Length: 242
Image (cartoon, rainbow, N blue to C red; front, side, top):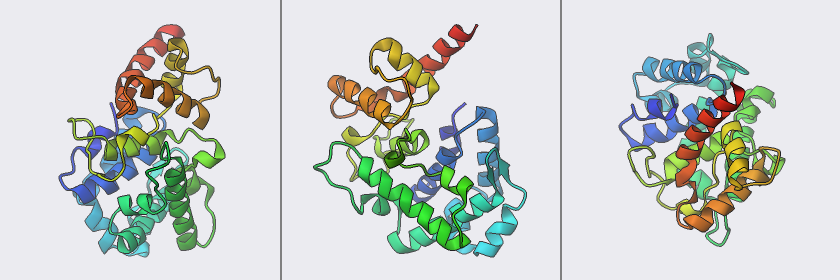
């Protein structure tokens, strides 16, 4: 089960972009709980997540999410997220424009653009709340802190890679060649065994190292192997645990 399945329920670019960000940042913990909570949000908004984001007030959002809970995150986090998206969409029209604000073709990867994107949403959330909420910030890590940013890199894969029945290819101005592979424990373990990385910690440097080695195989689309590595890593991980 993959949270991407939920996002495929949307039909428009706007809903897939906003729904994709929500699904990706909640993609931690047990898969069935992730799917359940994402579907709760999307079904309750009648699969018109952008309309909900844009047409409701912050007060209405807090009422809507008052009983929501997903591991470390509560209803206030989701209210802050959806209200932050409202402000961003008003100012930038879409999430891609926010991401592109500092983006440079000359840079090897999306590292600096991802830092800007994540930081901007954290700042927006803090401005709405009136304080820095740690559980909200957890949803938006930055490569500058050393985090592998697995969930945000997964979101970027969904948005950037061409439409191949898995990813959407919505963002046209970010080259797939600059993406960084989403790294979790399964991808990290298998990548070590395959010689794609020598690092022990599943951090940003490991993600860059794995991506760099995959780029030797496919310079234009190094993260195309993400889905296969993740699934194979899960099987291998379970076999080791047996």
